[in-house]
Image 1 (spheres, rainbow, N blue to C red):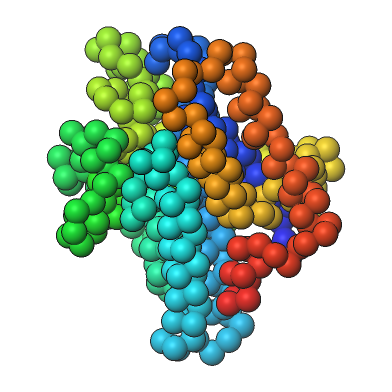
Image 2 (cartoon, rainbow, N blue to C red):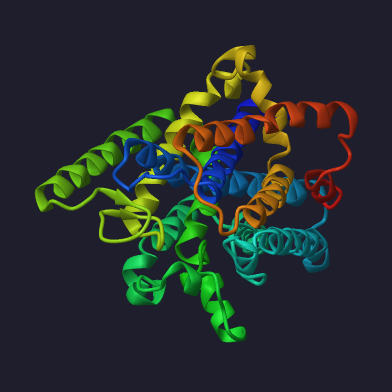
Length: 356
């Protein structure tokens, strides 16, 4: 049975991704990092990727679990499941990178590892997760959570953006993929494991609620600590309690907790046979959720054209940039509805479903 609240979470995640990427390509004139709009945009961006990766981990785990339960799984059967996903996701990453090349006004080199190569690694990990007990997966997630503390400077804390998206030779490309790229496996795979755990713990409400309360206390203490030290609580990069590039332990922990809260809120009573939060009022989000990977790729292709045309052009005024960002984010909702109505079989999601 397809869960509607999952499609809604996917939709929110991909639309937030579209918003933050659009804002990065057409930043308005005169907006500093401490401007309220910059803070809101950064907050959306900080939650978008964890949501997107966690919900992808949930889907990969569920797909692998269904395959384990429905077919006689041996090494060849699992390879038939894994290889198409790795190839398709890696191909999509190359499309994204090629659309936004640095020399064309974009943000990447063509070989840059990113969130889709992270999901390709997760596809390799997926079959392993279904054979690991829930408590062992929880331990694995906690280990991944603290990897920034273990690898320390190997996470690329001193890299600028150009260095982070560039790699010279195979060894450095592997470093970007695993340790210090934009979405390195360590620690971002913790969200994949989190996705596998969310479904398992969804019926253990008492344990989940206690964990959330304790975690929110820790997050509150981190805010007080930030105020006491006089340093920012959260920054995209730099000296702060939470940082995105590179993702530190407190960022992974905090964003993971808010992702769990989002799951908890939006599931409503659907898991027990009722309706998701909002009933039918939020159903307009669902087509975009079912098309999240395709939207992810296609919005970058469009932004690549915009980036190329805006090279060496002055920044847009605040309201113009804001309006264009909202329009570009919103347009994917009706496009997803039209896609589902007229060409539902043409998408990357449909291609992946053929190998379930």
